[in-house]
Length: 116
Image 1 (cartoon, rainbow, N blue to C red):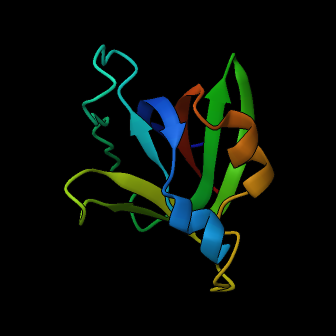
Image 2 (cartoon, rainbow, N blue to C red):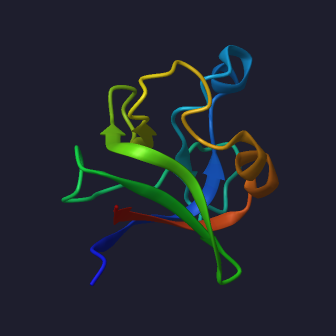
Image 3 (cartoon, rainbow, N blue to C red):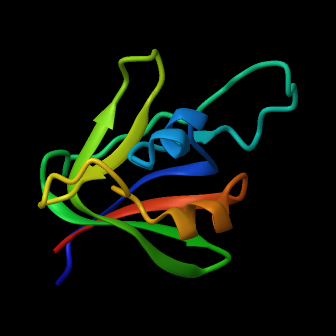
């Protein structure tokens, strides 16, 4: 049986710097229930699998896609939660799949992490 956890659900987004640097490493989820666009409101992300190696998966419209493979990271240094995976080869670019990120940008998704 594959161990998996839902990390969060919301509108997929990332900071522009992720694409400028080519890292595409960290994403966050905006609260899809937020009615005031002038307020930046994100979803809390949690997992007991932080530090484990596996797949970060997006589920949108009941379709799963592997966003990235590596060691799960959840970081709240900026005052809200962001997540990503650190690839095993320690590359400094494309931690997450840019094609999938752009396809699902500003879409409601569920982020799921599965152990590999």
